[in-house]
Length: 253
Image 1: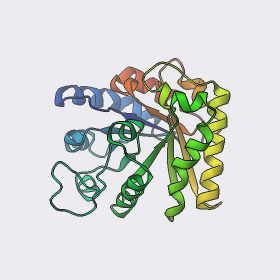
Image 2: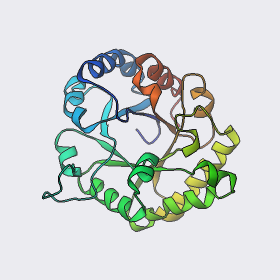
Image 3: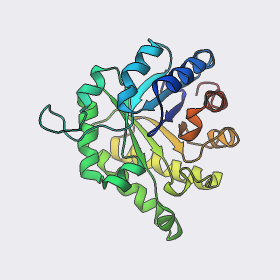
């Protein structure tokens, strides 16, 4: 069913507290439950809040995921790391891999991200691979080649299901939004690349991320090949996140 639904995933980044998380998740329960048949919803939360978030939701129709996963698969002397098995053990259902902030601040490249994808799949956590170009790359006309290169690691995996989030780096948190034509062109390219790398039978969801909010969500979600949204700041407010989920409520494909 989820492969015919729109997806809306919130990325809390380094935000939250036990008190505010409880208020947010409880405020979302009624609205998200009413839309669960039409939209697959989730929140990627800081690792320290995965357990409490799962307990608050208690099988409620809002998946809890991680914002990152360690490149180390095994247990051992990796101080500060949290491996995929640990995330699965505490209830995480998915993990973001390769978010632009991880690529920027932690210099994560395709070799590291491929290892993280392997680790997620081995632990039965669904990876959401994030791709996207910088403003300089867009202005130089390199955006397509950059995204193709970021997707290339999919050829190293045997996948029947793929979720990619396209986030033009220059649009994240800036309020700048690509035109719907630019979004459509890139999402079509991503679809074509996934089919080429993974085979014609692969199930695909390609989400758009980058300053998605209540004002632009409906227009963005109506763009061809946009299967949902990865939402940043707007996912921290129940009203705005619920409104974006509502904008994704369209008949099943």
